[in-house]
Length: 503
Image 1: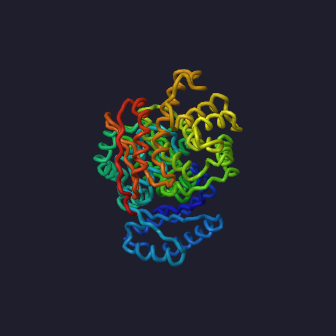
Image 2: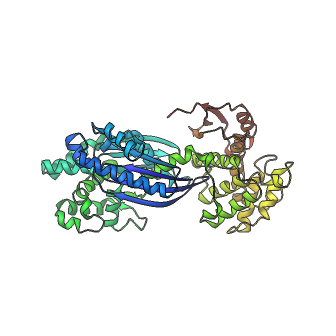
Image 3: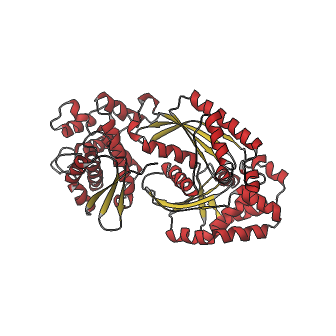
């Protein structure tokens, strides 16, 4: 499945075209950006000028054509502060619908923050812990803190770089601008600091440009506060011509990079941060991740299009054995969701997550031999299957997790398990405990569960399930299969169903 996401921001308009695989694997096919600066006049006058609107609609028509040429199933367009704050936003939305055949969703500041979080989180390894994010756009800055599936804190402040550049131009006082930014950030940063994120990521073109100027954007290193403070001083005192000559800045950011650096500097000071990690992923990636999550059961995997040879070989084997169906992808999606939410408890890592993913996709492979004892047949087929890129030990781990998706609990008497060391035994116990419940939650093989999350306050674990269907069979089966989970995690697990909210 291919989808396109269009992010209509105050500073720029972005397009990203992605191919979605199940479960949770995406490939970027095309990207484009136009620096329209819709917010420059809009924030001064309160309305989008007709000339700016005409240019924006022209870009949207071109992006629509690019998306259609790629054969996308859906084009997802969202607009942020420039359109959100314009009194003629209705005209913009109507013209986009009529002339570009695009349904533009004008998102609130909070929803913008949620989508940014999804985009950042989607690119992080499993078990990443609590993270903070700052996104500085043209019209607003979003500050958020989240952990796993849960977004714990989000604030949208009118501190975008176009607004700050205009404020600096009108008042001609850098000191006054810094004082204003500090006052706007103070209370929000106190709450941000209190929540204690383990790592803080910075998204948007401004932060990526700062990272490039500091020589850290492509290295994966962080922006340090000391060097940023020195850089900000130079950017705020440099001439427009000298700034435009800087490669990462150019003419399009020459007016805004200085004020933007000041927002980042003050944020780091007020939040007590020594470093921020530049992140390429942002709102548009969040739009794609959100769509993929809502349509997980419909995703179709094309084996030849998967670059990772390990994943490709799993898909090929699963398809060959007739195991790659809606139930397999739904079970895998639910299992990985549980794995991510439970990361603080199990403390496993990315390679272990892959073991769970591959075992989930292959857990019913044993039906190829016989329905009776199909879990044992799955073990045999995986151990002896043509899985490229796997060591014998890795293949055995995948096989054991698939084998224990039902039936007896792991035992030293069982083939393959008794030979494992203590660490690998625990991996099999944890991953199979999760898989047993995920498989039970799709007992009808109809993908009735829309979403789920695991919540723990230090006591029992509550598994909150979103669905609009009757889940009696799923809840009964998952409950019966939760015994291993309770033993492994040493916590009780309860199930609660919530009706999925209409959107």
